[in-house]
Length: 484
Image (cartoon, rainbow, N blue to C red; front, side, top):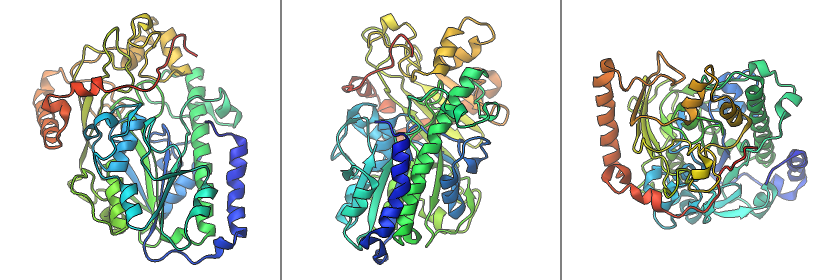
């Protein structure tokens, strides 16, 4: 469901309704902190004012960053909606989630403890609004509510709450030209280096910005409700996205534009404001953080680490020395390969301050799905692991243009088994040096470090049973031909 101007109006008046409500004057809940988790759909780094973006306006995200901690190295476990959100709920690396490691799957109920359930058992009022886990079949995350107003109306007075606010923005589709009509300067929008620099692409990015701004407005309305009830001081607020923007080589990929996300956290009662932290963190760290804040035991199975020491300390920059890397990955997004192959494009990556090392387990497959839509496993699936968009269509239509072929190949061509990027020289992660002799020793070191991590984390893909991810049922659809 898409949310338009009428919903913006409703969000704007909700705080007024609550200020007029008898329950708005209630005493703040007891000592245990409230928790708000606000997650945008397909919102990637660095598209927020707090990160220096010159066009997109995100005053409410920026407020959370100003009143708390802005993280510059926050990553998702997997750049696909379902596994990313499952990893958040369970505090687990996505590859440990069975069917939940893939998009459009079945929720693996009972496989691991879920933070919403643990908080509910500890006396929290737990619920979600709009998109929580998914797409897929299952309902983790507590009770679903039809509006923010209904959640707070149902909350027992004085009970601490844990609320998942899951916007549908900035997921496609977009209203073409919406960013330009809003008055955005298309010459100033941020383009990743693999994007064509054309009016079509700049307008497409501006339309994405338009929906980022709508998410931010709705976040502001939610904060106003909590503030009107006198609860904001003792509420931990976390704001982030579930993976990178829905553009070629971004969403569904292990480059920074696919797995690097905005993250700001505030808790006025406990977290010193105005700090920027460069520690590498995963969104799997969210679940243990919430549990520690609520004084609930953190299950030993969780692979995430609580962020509370980073939040309540006074440090800036690199606070914990061992938070110097992350390991991320991907299995099947959609079954977009050719003919009888239902598999995805399995990848794992190690990201440090200086390097990005990617291992592609099936380099004979297409990273964005087959371009031969007549041969696709899902008939008429066209580059099915990349959302249809004006940018995707532009690259396709100009793929034979010598000036554009490299950019097309970066997004859609087959890739070697290993990729290595030297970030000081190549921040856009465009020049793969994995095959160059001078980097052979470095590549071996990073490969061994990645392998050791995956073995320790019991990743089926590295332990020899990765084919299970290709065989799990797929419950969704795929981008189709012709492009729209």
